[in-house]
Image (cartoon, rainbow, N blue to C red; front, side, top):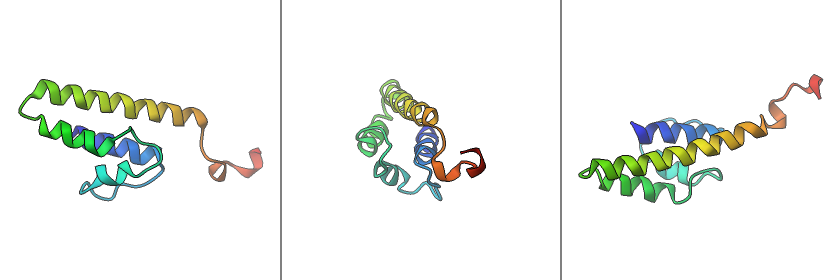
Length: 88
């Protein structure tokens, strides 16, 4: 679930739709706005599921990094093509 939520956040920051979860981390990793080495870090977290504390820490780090990308992008505002032309 955590990976799915982070994927949705990354897709939203990049103004893309996530149509299914299959290979969503791979697709998200190709976006210009994404945590560094995202797909590999997701795979490493899954590999640590036998050690829940480590896996959770890794997912928390990814979440924090993805959240900061969201905050950075939301401060920039919507792209010009989405703004009301009468307001410009």
